[in-house]
Each structure stands twice: as C-alpha cells, then as structure tokens.
Image 1: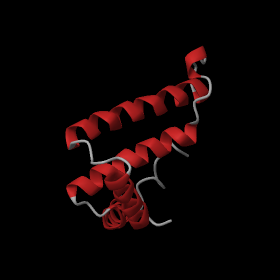
Image 2 (image 1 turned 45 degrees about the horizontal axis):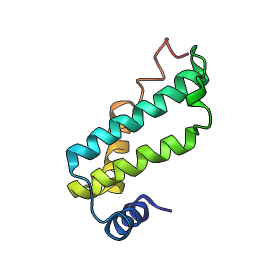
Image 3 (image 1 turned 30 degrees about the vertical axis):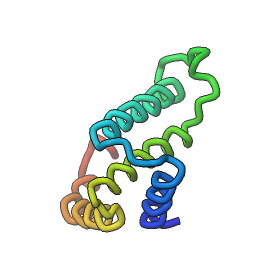
Length: 108
C-alpha cells in the first residue's frame, strides 16, 4: 500500500464508518495520546521500567499504526499530501545531512 492509498482508505473509512473527522485540535490531542501509549511500551520494553498489569497485551506495532492513522487523518483534514511531504523531507535531509552523521564521533 502506498501512502496515497492509505490516505484514501482512511478518508473512505472516516466518511462511511466513522461518520466524520474529529476536528483538527481533537485529532492533535488524540495523536499526543497515541504517542504517549507508544512511549509507555517503548520505555517498558527497551528502557528500565517494568511492565504493569495494565500494560500487558499492548502491541508495539498496533500503537505505531494508531499514530499513523491519526497522522493521516490530520493530513487529510489539512490538505497535506503525505507522499509529496515525505519526498520533500527526504530531499531536505539528504542535502542538509549529507555528511553530518558520517563525521559524528558520538555515533561511531
């Protein structure tokens, strides 16, 4: 599936099953909640905190997909073509960071 296809699938689902998009600020809040849920799993899986009973059954991939879903909703609502935005972002990084990390002693 392409990013463009994902944007279309989300839009179709929202307009049929979901009735309508939540407003942009509500979706921004939901995005922050979802990032927090991902953070909780990451901290417990790769960090030093232990899992709580309420954390069990949470799936890292599913939490990442939740974030992607809400990000796609926001992109659709704001008229952002994520394919174009991502391509431009990669170009920016390739120009700006061409040698930056190769000479970073902190990561070698």
